[in-house]
Amino acid sequence: MKPSLLIVDDDEDIRSQMQWALSTNYTILTASDRKSATEEFAKSKSQVVLLDLGLPPNPNSPEEGLSTMSDILAIDASAKVIIISGQGERENAVRAIGEGAYDFIGKPVEIETLEIMLKRCFYLVSLESEYNSIRDQFIDSSFEGMLGTSENMLKVFESIRKVATTEAPVMILGESGTGKEMAAKAIHQRSSRKEGPFVAINCSAIPETLLESELFGHEKGSFTGADSQRIGKIEQANDGTLFLDEIGEVPLSVQVKLLRFLQEQYIERVGGRVQIGVNARVIAATNADLKKSMNDGSFREDFYYRLSVVEILLPSLRNRENDVDLISKAILQSYASETGRKGIAFSKKAINAIRKHRWPGNVRELQNRIRRAVIMAEGKQISPEDLELENVSSNGNRTLKQAREELEREMIISSLKKNSGKISPAAAELGISRPTFYELMDKLGIERDKK
Image (tube, rainbow, N blue to C red):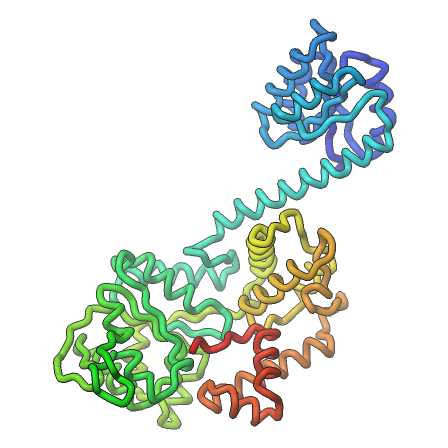
């Protein structure tokens, strides 16, 4: 269906000439005065209008044309009005720009110049329409900052709504990059504790020797280097929510103390003797198989069942139907606005590549690739190469590069788990340097530990 273009001019010959010249690409509508123009626009909602300022009953004055433009923009402020101005009317055309016109073109109108202007104008209209559609879709599909319309994610949102109104401990399960911390924040924001603190700690990022002190705090002089009292993460979360990410990495000695806190709601700082009451809700998360860890004795069964009163499983991005389209466009708009590159969009090949990619790093990988693409893209369209994705065939077969990346990611994650998140031994095990290991983590969307 061709886009509609409204031409407003009191000269019938000019209207006929423009209609003949432009009808191949546009559905042409015409009007000869303010009343008919306003009525036609209200009926057709044409997004682009060609307007001559000299309209009856005062064709030698711009006032009637300016009033017509004002009426049109009052009906739809997003309409693009292009002013047709004579040689002596440039000042009036500039005035019209100041009052909301999109652009102006001088008489006699050169059709080739007008066609270029119209093409650019309708392209802008399509971008704005897409933006508004995504914005509306974002509002409809956003849940505490989480995006999704797939059945899997709607189930997650419903689980969060239900569990948020309780004080039950929650275990969030899911692959790396699926948004476990966002889900924990959503529970906090919808709970009676939302005015209290949300305190997060990545248990795999803290060396075992320091984890107990990080969680429980310590008294001055309790160990070498403890030159002052320190409040731990659990105390910081008083009257709020404590989020324990990568709970599967917590050593058994600390599991015992966390279990006691969950049961009795008090702690003792390292080196302290005073019992300190703490009222904090605990949400834990992991991408590990805790039942396997219970079988091999590295995770306490009583600790698991105390944490997992309610379990919420976050689906991987590849199992979320068409959510990747919605999320990628929302991420693109965010980064484009952040970097001043408004108007940039995915090419059709890029959209196809995004849909076909397996996304082993889930949403985090998607964010990283789009952020890079916004920076690196040369023009207004993002290509698969900008995303560092291969063009994929219509049969959906993986490319060699995709298969290699998935294997690399699995090996890196496995090595990190085996070496308790320590980079040096993990890199040595894989026969690569620390810098190369970090580069691969960034490329594959694997989050670095926050030391």
